[in-house]
Image (cartoon, rainbow, N blue to C red; front, side, top):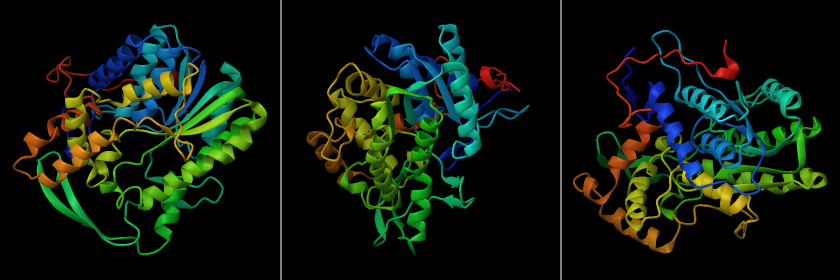
Length: 399
């Protein structure tokens, strides 16, 4: 079939197998170009491995450290005449590239919040790897069915104390407008969001992995967070999502206690604002990212997901590097984004931005390109007029 992008709001309903494969290949080539990550991980579990930071983490571990990787994700395979999700195609492309390079790579598709998928993952580790020395937790889901209570939780994106009004952009049309978001009506919104996006499931994973004996001596585990600039605080860091991130970060000392007898350690890495399926859904953030990209590209310090993860692994987590923890004990690879000169220039542009000057003052075209890259579109090396075989399988989980 010929596959073209079909967009509804911040979601692209189609994805392109050759385009996603190109995306994966370009990320692999970047990691290889940076050379070996000294003393890097060798057996890695990535929970949430199919897109964004999780995919980039898996690529970095495999092609930067020659690591064996197991990836867990929840994606939809293709059906005749209906493309699979981008994450499905990403994972298929990654496995094929890893196998061609002689690297172990297997995947599990299912609800990572469930006890069933945890048990399947542990069984695979026991059978084929024995133990893992790095666990990356990079789940991004809007809902979670709690494995112990059966309660279905759905996260919400809301301010907490008062309504929030600021600029936003429809990145498809380029229209800049004001948006107002009402605050939560009760504490349930916070509790549900924390249940989905907080640290409880990360803790459940580490507890189960340790109890099964599949965590190696000196194991490391890392989860990802975001802080961002003050202009996004009301909707992000001081909103319902921020409460979930607070909970995630508060899980670190709990896990450190749990891992202490193994000489293990846990971290939260605060990463840069990037175009992801999740960030595209947050009002204000696409406009901020468009301005941020322009400023950082002009300064020559822009990074995408793969650059962020390669730097995290090579300069913070491994190679006897300085972790450069902040006062709260977090790794900060958002350091370039949060540089005073970068934030001052973004803030100045924010006061000026309108629909009329959007193309001049921001990198809205770069934002759109990155958005479509997530789904395998807008790559020069791919012929989108040619027919594609949508029925791509992930080698390790073929039906």
